Image (spheres, rainbow, N blue to C red):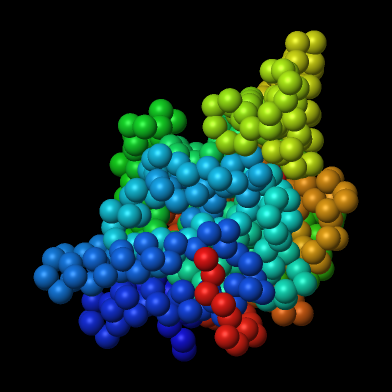
Length: 494
Ligand code: GLN
């Protein structure tokens, strides 16, 4: 296997045995970026010099005999809506094209403290609004398994980078599925932890009551390692939870015999690709063979989740994005007077999808509409959460497909927003309920990856790791890598 194919825990062993230096590792990953990123286009910015300098420091610390963390020297990427001090953070928007944050997000700072090496910032749907990475104002990221298809979104750059070996792991953000859906479409592990488990300080807000950060990794063990590094209370985020985060690696290898898994019957009714359904039923058999008890469960308000999300998320987005006004920071398009300046700035700075959401959200929050839309949606959100509360009285984990289809062709859903929104029917309910959800590799259909979603009780990521690891160990899906052609003589990326 090539260095860029290895997982963080495998590389960590090589580093601590001195079979590989951090500089060699970072160099190998940067070379991989040069070779495949001209076709994958996962990165908005590559932090080459900074990465090599950090790697040198890690090697020096190790040479001095200092204790280093498991992720020290491991190259990673951050979705470009996560602020990094001194490194451009664009949200893949013209509005922030030249924005260099004066501070780092807590997650970025925590990873830096462990000695993990930032190699770059990845492409996303503009302001994380989308399911395909096609709404990026800069370019579309391509799926490493089939370059004519989307990687999913909105964390498509992060998922594609990890799948293509352009980063060992990455962070994404998930408001309605943006970690789990691209993870499924690119054959990586994607975890959206419980709301509040990870600090959101320094992550550009989309819908604050739904947003959560999480890891995209090559396997389940890496997911636990990264969560260990970033989870926990933060005084800078009042919504971060005070509960102590356990060592998530402790759950790997624990038995799942007797665990009760519920399969929500509302998830498999219409619109699901037969190949996805087949892989899903196959996965249930694997879990049963491992001793888990699999039964059908009902989440009666499932069909309300998508409409509720598309009131609440745009509502919160319209409020969060009000700060991009041409005055405080970001793009400014000068005009004769104040109001035309706002108008020009916001029409030139935001793309079509972002403007659509701002208009829908502003409408839903307006007096006269608020009660009929926003308040009503909040009430239905409570019903959706109660469905989960009831199901978790009896079941430890709920199991569903992650996405109703495999990766679709670039351009296929762009003209039809509702069809695009349907990409997230299985992932959105977890954000509304605030519970953790994980997507793991569940095989392929015609060379395209399929994901399996595990949903758990709030703050019980541990049980998800238990089930995910047991499943992963009895299948070989997480070991497959995409057959990507290398662009010979690929120009180093700036
Ligand atoms: N695809 C969903 C949307 O467009 C979810 C995005 C996300 O999770 N950031 O809103």
